[in-house]
Image (cartoon, rainbow, N blue to C red; front, side, top):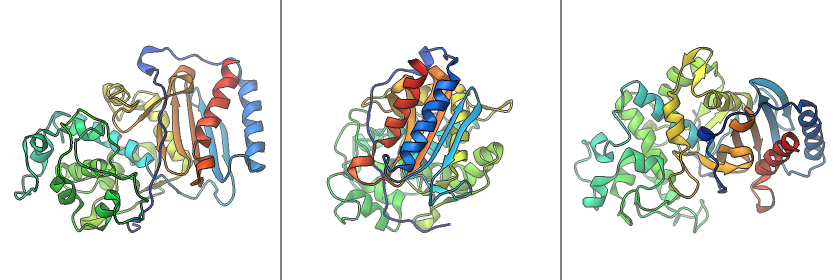
Length: 340
């Protein structure tokens, strides 16, 4: 395990077209897609897209592109940053399906009765549900975007330095009614890790190993731990890009993997329903081709494009403003090649 480090993620928000309402379009333009991918690879090698590390494309469940760019290769796990959040959403869906969690309507505080001295306890805090955490609508007073993540005034930085991240989150004052306002909150996602650990009796990493990684054939990963061994569900997962694509393919196939239903299709539908601000249950919604995505700082993307039966993965080290949306541009180019 790697130690928890103060590196984070930024994300962009786009228009949603729900995949539940669209039938897949099986492209007859494979040559054009491959030609466009070839041009994209040339542009990456020329430096047009900054420090891009990989580009993987599946269509109709067939691998049509797998490209890596120095210093990365096929065997080097890549930092997922906030893509980790979408993996965590999948784990919550599995935990509900297997009976570890009753429903998304369970109250947050009911998972942690051992914390008998919760600060700033009021009616609003008592009303927070699992659903509110998933949708980033918990209502906590929280700010992780005003200051740099390395700045001690940043709430996420304070969370990192706490000796008990679950208690830190539970003690926060409230700012809104739960469910009333979207506010990006990595601490809310960290609570999901705490919930999985509480109901399963082992870490979220161990839960993922048993019920997600093993069935998908994922065996090369690293998951950072925070205080008290809590799996860093906010940004701490490292995976091979090809395994990121496996996660995307699982979701595209409505949770079915080689005949085994690992994740209920209903959970996927709930997860990509717009809860406000083009955000579902730890998924970003609405880009080209009716896609939705897992996104992480620096250019980590898993795009799922149901209208074209496609999964697109990019990894990168683009942490400057000029290259943060590289993945979105690559998605647009590939989808346009299909639709032109």
